[in-house]
Image 1 (tube, rainbow, N blue to C red):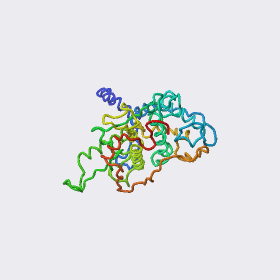
Image 2 (cartoon, one colour):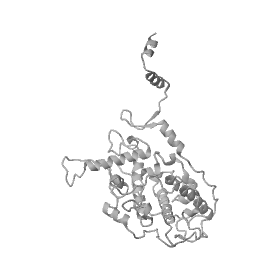
Image 3 (cartoon, rainbow, N blue to C red):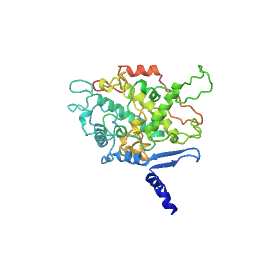
Image 4 (tube, rainbow, N blue to C red):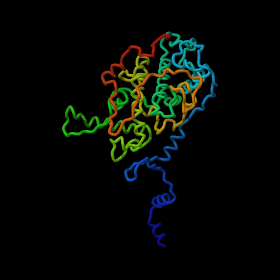
Length: 373
């Protein structure tokens, strides 16, 4: 009798919520990532995660080329993939054309009348080929030198391009993207003031705080995670008390600075005007370019293990590739893990230098504006 009276006086919505609570039909999943009582948990909306996962399409790996000695290749002007076999070269080219052009069309990057040429039949630079060559070097650099971030998942062209010519999340100079300069030519994002009054020794400002907040929110959205994915909620600044993911993210920032400074921004003279920003700078990457809202790109699919030409190292996950010779990975200084209380190092290029570097019209190292090399 008491239950009947209560039910009659309660709204249908309240009854539904009470019923869902009893049978455990929550739509939010919480994962504890730290000490209880410190709000160290990740909250995932089940419907959003399911929808995001369904959108991920992983291309089936092409049949292996089989073991054969690397080179010499029968083609001219091969500058990067010249340390693999003919069979591995061909399957890598086919895969790349699908990952980027979306149709498997070789003409997207090549002059079909002269496959070795870096120019179109009319003599104009074939910028897609020049950019793709540099992106191959970049992919090898990432997989070979930044295992602290990409681990044994690695990256391929498809990780960012997803079958499209342009990846998501590319950015250019503007007042709205100032905080993204952290991935190019700015120093650490930490803003902690030790004094009340501003001075040369205490340059922390509200504007710097705004940039840091914007940067952290963009990283959170890029990976689809909470702040506690990388930080301890009771001491955000502490490295010692932070989850391991913060160290992984730190190496990702260093990787992005290398990618933007060494590979993407210097391509400015190669791109046609339609590919440049309003201030004339080349497109640059940020976290969302690879992650696309997932805490791991492509939810951790290990595509690169099937394509040794992109490894940048002699083995992957402990499995050596016998047909791969010495790789042409760019040299990169060893990256150390920050200790407790450490501050990320300043980027090697300052703001003025980066603007000058990005707007130069001189060809960059490893990229030719025209002709074969």
